[in-house]
Image (cartoon, rainbow, N blue to C red; front, side, top):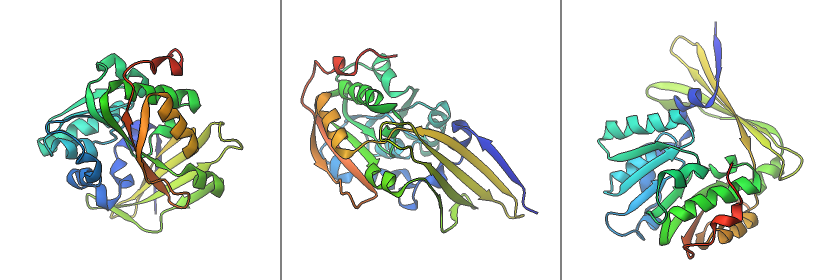
Length: 270
């Protein structure tokens, strides 16, 4: 008999987050290597921030390359997992629990040579106002000429497919255990409305029992053209983009061209 136990919440999902990372990026060194092209732009001993660190694969991989790395996330559980992974690999990574708008409270302006916001994280910022506030915080922390590296789903595709249930067509094996990954998309009528995404990890043990951990996330998708405008508003200029309307994901690299004057565009924080 199969027993299903459902545990909801970000902290619960953090414990099984590795099932959401592709095999090719599970090892920290391989995750960092996927950004070799942009990392080649950095000076030696670069100061780097991963401001959506998840469970730390990228941050630890960057530290392994000799960089000075800070990893932040809005989730205390994700920050804890990052610290644990850093210890496991003997990597020097400073971890801080902070959401994007709190970043200037923890770090001085013009601190980092590169800021990473990857893993399709930006859609969790609340609407256009929240997104610009998040990007403004990232821009403030970059040195002049420093770069923001951002990856995103192609939300134009996501919305075109409508509300649906996506069930993985194969088992994912992690630490000797198998799981099925399920995404439930709740697509709102309008772009600016709050959308919802539920992610579930159904983990199967050798006795046939199933432990399901799920998380319901709020989401505010955006068009690529909107992102381009918002990057410019906070003093960032796009250097490179892989955006393609037919591709599932894309990466944008934007450099800091302004050192002051962007703070007011987002309005007061709160």
